[in-house]
Amino acid sequence: MSKNLKKEPMNVTKKAIIGIVTIAVAIMLIFVCRSLFEDADKSKNYVCQMPITGEYHVWTEGGLQMQYFGNVESYNKTSQVEFSGLEKNENGYIATGKNPAAALTFTDNGRGMIVGSFRVVLPTDHQNMEKIQRDFGSEEALINNLVRPTLYKVVTACGPLMSSLQSVSETRTDLIDYITDQLNNGVYKTKAIKTEVVNEITGEPETRTTAQIIEDINAPRGYKRQEVSPFSQYGITCGLVSITDIKYDAATQDQIDAQKAANLAVITSKTKSIEAMQKTIQIAEEGKAATEKAKWEQERIKIVEVTKAEQEREVARLAAEKAEFDKKKIVAEGEAKAAANRALVAAGLTPLERANIEKETKIGVANALKDIKLPRIVMTGGSGSGGAGAAFDAMGLKAMTELVDKMSE
Image (cartoon, rainbow, N blue to C red):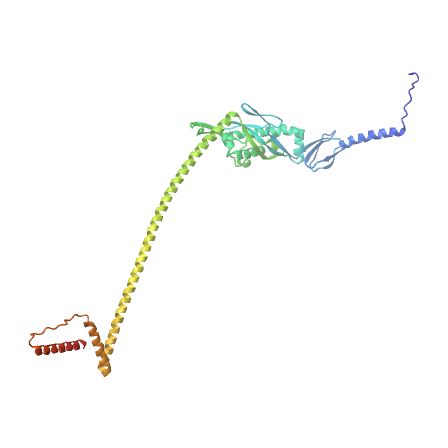
């Protein structure tokens, strides 16, 4: 059976051969075109090393660029560099991973790990980009061999400028400024300053050595530098430094907690003292206020009484003036009436007027005498001389009548 099987020749047509060749050429052209042209992204810088000559061409504007089979390396114009890799252990924390945290040692020998990030901005001029490409060859090498080592060196230089407790509180913002300034302008030149302080925990005096930045008006930002920033040699700038956290080793954290507790106790004591002083002042002020209130109440009563007395005196004065006026009025009226009567008498009264005057006079006298108790029985001298007694009584009555007449006049 195998003898009957014969190999038939493969018939390849000319059309099939042309198709295969076309596909091969197309694939080759695709690879060739990728080496001939580069579609540049505007957010990146490109450095193309030309074949044979080895010259560098830098593209920073984006668009279609002629590569000519050269080797192209791209760099992000800006990139965010993080330093956040941490691992906790029994002693605190250690830096780990591709983006390890930055370590520093403070003036009180406390140790910490800074977690954060910052932004790196690359230059756009040909000279600096060519230098970056010659020295590092790629963005990854630039970050790992220049950017990160410079960051860790700067952070280490910031440690002696403050204590661990200060890094927790008031000078943390200064730490951001120190890092940014030294990244761009170089590490500070400092001098050691020894100061006598009182330990916040033990209360005992101790000597601490702190680093003080040496000032120089001719240096960037007025500070003398140990060296020029390596970033400035490549036209690189850094900014937007962000510190999200600072992790401390166990001993340093215990020291910070103890210092916080001591400071809190001092603050609490001062607060209580201030409250006591304020309460004392308040009580004194309240006493003064009560005294002033009582004083003004007495003054008010005095004013009321004085006003009342003045009113009464004024009323009495007006009453006296009125009485004097009434008196003068009565006197004047009496004098006027007497004058009128004298005028009438001088002018001569008519019989009727005279009779009325006498009548009224006698009536008045009678009214005045009616209340006088006169004896109703007149005793005469002798019972036997009736005629003589009668004559005497008549004479007495006549005398009384004349007396009344005279009184009336």
